[in-house]
Length: 169
Image (cartoon, rainbow, N blue to C red):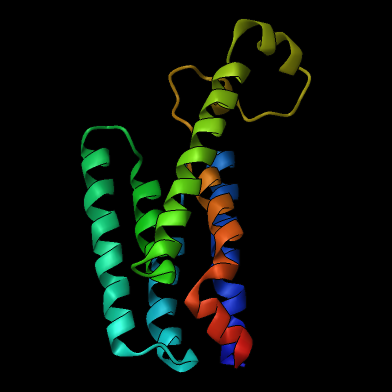
């Protein structure tokens, strides 16, 4: 039964983060807290050893260091930094994390280009009749990068060690 939580908690948290980010440009702290806390509760239950959990913490700390730097330079939002850090726990320290972060970068680039196109003068005439949140059209607003993070996480999650262990339990 607890193995099923591994299959549900992570995807729901990532989907919620993506949806709240696109609708309000914020990612609730409780999403990142739930991701972190549930990882530490569920990882030993599914069979991850303490060394693997420790390396996951190292991975999260590395991601946090980079994200904190980007946040300090006003390149990344705080919610995005917290979400990436918490989700790094689930991917661990290895190629799963590299694949995840690479996909986040690619999807984030496509999302940014799409938002910039959406904000052009020509597109503003086309989108006036559509129910698009106003902040997406604001040229001074940021990009809801949580969408790219969430999509990349959902695409890569089935390849992670914790997911595989939960499926095989």
